Amino acid sequence: MVRDWPLVRRNAHTLKSSFAYLGGVRPEQACHELEVASMQGEVDPDAAKGMLEKIQNLYKGFLSALIGWQEQSLPMA
Image 1 (tube, one colour):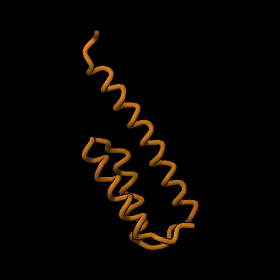
Image 2: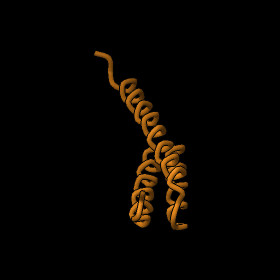
Image 3: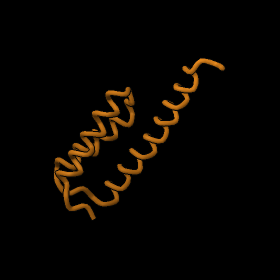
């Protein structure tokens, strides 16, 4: 069980900012949801787990998109 909600809030905020910088709107929004929930204090453990799983899945999709974009941008040899 999470006991350090301020740490969760800071990490969610940092991730949110990183996704925003890179253009990851959906993962940014998911991080914002976790950040806001953690600012309100105790979050239901199942809800927190669901939020983290959502962020992880969105991260994986975002990373795949970035890799695909990078591969398309490289000159053909």
